[in-house]
Length: 293
Image (cartoon, rainbow, N blue to C red; front, side, top):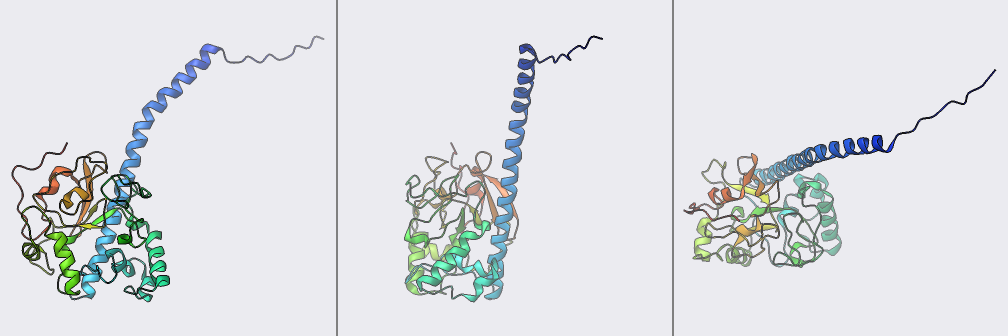
């Protein structure tokens, strides 16, 4: 009897090359689809974050007779992130949010940093002090702002609060004057005109075109219709006098950002449409609109 050893036939070089070619083709087809799916997921999460932040502001105003929070600058700066924190993290309500105690301030900052709602998933990481957009702790289209400046108090975030919604008259005169100095810094503006342009909620408006929060490179800002786009849509510009440059960034799928409005709805908006929104009470849409390059 003759025993024959089984033969094992391997792949030929041509067959291997064909398989590799098929795999490469599938990857080239799938990668763009995966990228689009990732961008869509990040955009959806960002819109959800904005709605939650807006809900926290609405709860604050409900608890304070329809009034939003003032701008706190002196003797210590208290950001909006702190003021709405108890409506996001209930246990934060057990702390004195206005305390200057270092331990309390640090614990509040740690609570804020742990909450993903403050961060767009497209811009989660900070620049670590690299000065690209006008300030050592400002962000970019793909970086959050903070925490290297004293102005941010160790906090970080990816969204800008519409400063025209701050309430004047609730804090000290020094705080109001600081805020109005920023708001009245636009071309042709002064503090008297800025005070008149504050929304001072509750106000007679549907709120469907009044931004509350937007993707941005800084904590807050007071856009003016005379503002021009930044030189770069990636770095933006942290300048106070042209605050629209803080939100005119290419963060989501090109020249677009996400915003949430006073009536509660959130949406993605083309950058050129930012000048059509009612950032302040006396807004007049410029004609022609600025050119976005």
